[in-house]
Image (cartoon, rainbow, N blue to C red; front, side, top):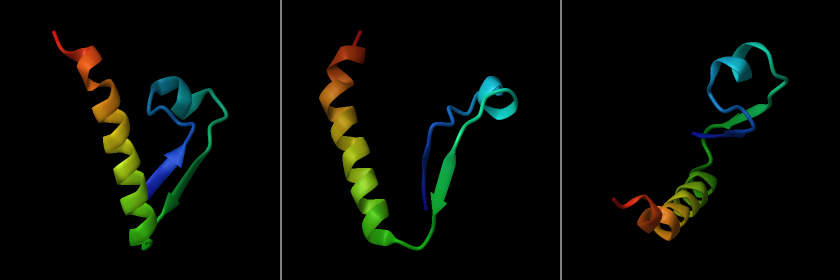
Length: 51
């Protein structure tokens, strides 16, 4: 399942803001593309979080 949108999973987003979210299920190719992108972004910025 791929979940995307502007919702930041916080209280304000859930109760006070006009947020959007889409959930796509059953599209393995799309899920793999999203996972690859997330891992790429993590790899690119992970050195900044090292203490």
